[in-house]
Length: 77
Image 1 (cartoon, helix red, strand yellow):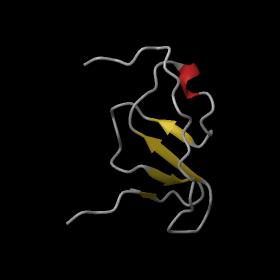
Image 2 (image 1 turned 120 degrees about the horizontal axis):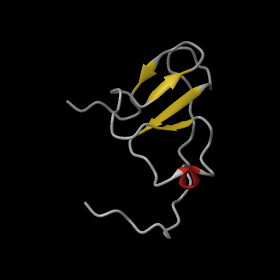
Image 3 (image 1 turned 135 degrees about the vertical axis):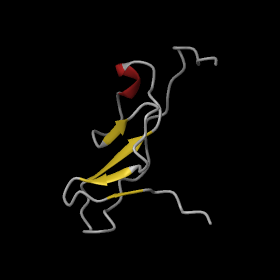
């Protein structure tokens, strides 16, 4: 696997935070698969975005108010 050069600028994370479908709170954390190269690569990302590397819990959103977890992707049948 080839990694991108370090001199490429990464776009800041800009997905809307959203609200919890269970309680309506805006205290939503986004769990993002992957890990930008180095801590400086994550500068500019909101503090509610957590890069989780390659080990993902099976959901990509969690509510800090009620503890609900969910996936932002539509379920395919």
